[in-house]
Each structure stands twice: as structure tokens, then as C-alpha cells.
Length: 152
View 1: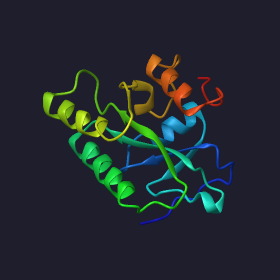
View 2: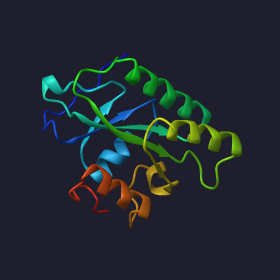
View 3: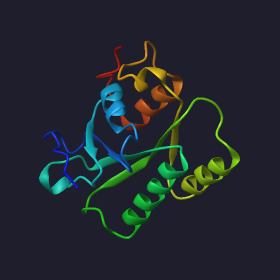
View 4: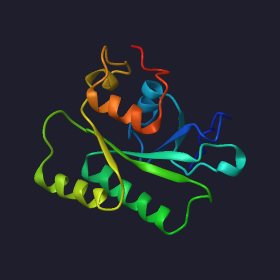
């Protein structure tokens, strides 16, 4: 697995950790600021972000990857000092989630704070939405985003 380089920034900056490929960490970092860490835990001792959000899609595969990542975190497989603020579940398609996926979301919610992000068509084609959905504003408040990167 290729390691994603992390820009050297403040340990207090938010780190977006993807649970799987295509999770949406890059889009969230572009929209809200912070560092897209990639699919690994950052190391605060090396100057990488200590505050992280774990990102995954709302598909069965995405929710499974989030669950495995949370298990690894619980088992102490992350560097010391990593502080999980919560999990961001990015919609994998427009519309409501099927009942089976909603049940999986509830399981994730039982062990971590969860913020859901709706389907954003602009992200599918590599753009930014003209206006951020309310859920992203709530997420920006949660991670302490300063508004950097929120302009379309």
C-alpha cells in the first residue's frame, strides 16, 4: 500500500482519515480545510494532525471498512495521541438508505459520534457545490473549520 504524504501542518489541524478508497476525505478536506491523511492513522509525534475524523461511504462495503477501522483504533493500532472526533458517513447515492444500511449506521453510532453528509452531485464530477449543505456547516462547526476552503 502506498503511503499518502501528509503536509506538515499544526497537530491541532483536523486530519481526515479515509476508511477505504473513494470515501470522500479529499472532498471534505477541500471543502472544510484540514489534511487528507489518506488510509492510515496520522502520527502526532511527527507533527501530523492529532484530531481526526474517520470518513467512509454509506455503502455496505464502506460501513464495513469504517467498523474495521474503529476496531483497529479500539485495539490500540493508532499512534499515541490520536483523538477521534467522530465518523463522517458520506452518502454513496442520492435518496434514503435501505433499512439494512441504516442498521449498520446505528451500530457505528453506538461506538462513535456520527455525522452524515448527503449526496453532493458536484463532488461526483470533481467540483464543489455552489452552497454547502447544512450538514457540512454542522460538520465545520464540529471540527473547528475556519471557513478555509468553503468557497465554491
